[in-house]
Structure formats: structure tokens, C-alpha cells
Length: 239
Ligand SMILES: Nc1ncnc2c1ncn2[C@@H]1O[C@H](COP(=O)(O)OP(=O)(O)OP(=O)(O)O)[C@@H](O)[C@H]1O
Ligand SMILES: [Mg+2]
Image (cartoon, rainbow, N blue to C red; front, side, top):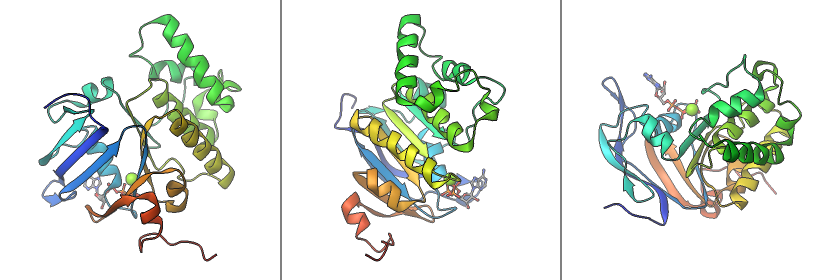
């Protein structure tokens, strides 16, 4: 069935493999509209594999997926992107030789209305002042934190239905981690639906409403962010 749903994304029974080696096993996940859902897990647990499967960058062996109530299993990657799934990941590089402004315009290439494009760009420069200061600077010369901001901005410029952030805090200094999470908070305030993949569980749970834990390709916990914070999967600092 297609049609609007309370959930922006629904996944059930998802299995993937690398060659003959199974990776994701019977993964089920639901992201309610307008909320931040986090997926926590150690190195190699299968988080990026899940992200890639959502974009059909890795084929599912089995399972069903829907976006805003519409079945998307047969949709190729470009259609999923066009229909509103945006990925920001350090692995998905920005274009180093191009300026910040040109990178944002590349990100917005589905917007073919000049007026809307300039509105969206000014909105981005308002939300990401650090990028406005550097709009003519080549992306390759940005700091790691600034480049993370650019990668997020490039996804946000399209007003995606679902924004996927794969480890946005990876490798950043604490002050930049704060800045990135401030951005996530401001997107949450605008009711953007976000899938946040993180190893930094304390930070992720500070912005998420719901959360999942993935271990060796399987979901071992799902529930509210509060329940996850209290669970054995998150080490809370001793008060
Ligand atoms: N193209 C591939 N071919 C074979 N194995 C792969 C491939 N990509 C990933 N893997 C393996 O699948 C497992 C899960 O990888 P994945 O990238 O999903 O982990 P992750 O949870 O994102 O980890 P990290 O936190 O380090 O990014 C790892 O053991 C990885 O080595
Ligand atoms: Mg990963």
C-alpha cells in the first residue's frame, strides 16, 4: 500500500551480504516523522552497511522498505535520492577543488528553479554561518569540522524527507562536535526526520528520540532514547 504514513521510513526483515558472508540479519527499523532516530554500534557492526542498504548502494537479499508509506524496494539509488533521502557521510566526499558555494549548488542540482535555489542557499548560509564566511574557499582547504558542516549543508539544502548522518562527529575536536550537534538540534527543531548513526552514544542520545543498537549485523535493542540511555548498551558517566 502506498500513502502518507506516520513513519518516514520503515524497514523489515532486511538481510544483506558481502559475497557469501552475511552482514545484516533480519533488521527492522522505523523512523517516526520529524524525529531523530539514532543507530549505535561498534566498529564493523554494520551501521554503514545499513545506511548503504537504505540508499540501495548495497542490494538487499531480503526485506521490505518504505519511504513515507510508499514501497521503495525496486527504486535505484538515484530515485531514492531524488525522492528525498539525503546522505551526509565523511566517506561521501565533498568536491575538494570546488568552492563551498559550488559544492552547495552541486548538492542542490535537483532544484532547477533559480529563485528557490537562491532562497535555499541563503537559508543554508544563515544556519551555517561558518560556511558563509568561506563561501569562495575551496572545500579541500576547509578544516575537518568545516568540511563536515559542508557535507551536512549539502544534504540539507534539498530539504530531504529523511536526512541520514553517518558518524558526523568522527574525528572532530570537541568544540566542532558541539557545533555539529547544535546544527542537528536546529534541524530537529525544524522537524526534519533524521537517522543519526554514531559511535558517540552520549552525544547521539542527547538529540535522539528513539534509538537502536546494532551488533554483528543484528538489532539487539530498540526503544526510546531514554530507555537506551539506561540500558546496558550505554556507559553512562558516573555522576
Ligand atoms: N565492500 C565490502 N566487502 C566486504 N566486507 C565489507 C565491505 N564493506 C564492509 N564490509 C565489512 O562489513 C562489516 C560492517 O561494515 P560497516 O561499514 O557496515 O561497519 P560500521 O558499523 O559502519 O563500522 P564503523 O563504525 O567502523 O564505520 C565490517 O566487518 C566490514 O569489514
Ligand atoms: Mg561506518
